[in-house]
Image (cartoon, rainbow, N blue to C red):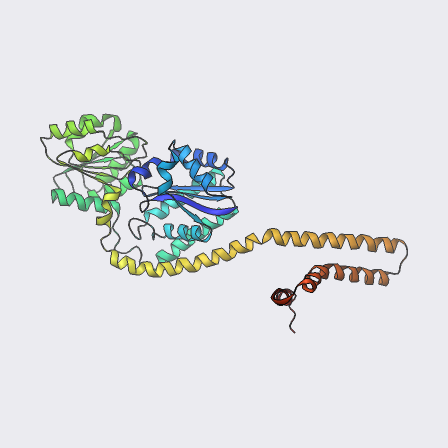
Length: 419
């Protein structure tokens, strides 16, 4: 069994691929249970808008890739070219870099750490973490904290939410007269709400599956001095044409905003522009919408240029962060090597114990026959010494040349022989 990371991310796969292999929190526990039934010892799944990664302890990686395709009802050839497989040390380094924000679309962005922690909590609750992965993720979060504390990796970082505001300002200039629609009420949408509320738009509407959660976010927006309300997702078609700016990020497996809905809105708005940012993976807005006139649609992949503002400062900090990561990887691999030696150590101790019990039984029989204790003890000690030293002595006597010299040095080291 080895440690593997199998995944796709923003550098290896376009959003059209990533959305097909994404997991949401609602089905993650079931997926983990299904995965560990495939002769996988331990497993955790990290799924965000930019990546889907499976961390496992398994004999080989290919069955995991096969499972990923099968679970999402995809042809293997559809995803295999976009996947990467990392083993042992590279898998450890990757986990440390991801949690530290070194492998993100936005270098140094902090949201990934919270998403990583939530994914691991789900795996822990599902009972799919064992000793290896538990230790790996414990160290992963410690490294991420160390990187954040001792480098400026997060400085000058612009979030996806802030990038959405900047893009909206490019289209409308001052957005104080624009009506904003937020679809969803999760962490990303709440970040967007804070950034847009700071610009004091004309109003912000939250459309959500449940009205209660939407109203809770609307109340937070109102507290920032912006007019806000909540509506149900099912009522969205009736209000869609009212909005100038739309930001969406839900866990829906199917698009929420279809081509027909947007076409009707464009017509009703008499070609006043609509700015849309789809931060969801899978996408909430049908891709065909981008072909419409007067519609400016951006996905998470489109935001890369905007979010990389200030990249030069963060790249300098990233150099220091990589040094920390590499040092911690080496420490973890030392622990892993010791852990791999445990079965050998146990076997050695079991063999020695069997020898001890055999000679002890002989000694007890001699004492029962009336042999003097000092003679019995002498025989016992001689027998144990001969048995314990037989294997290394025999190996040394049978070896020749370089092999003899190598074994001799090992034996001197093991038995701390100074001469």
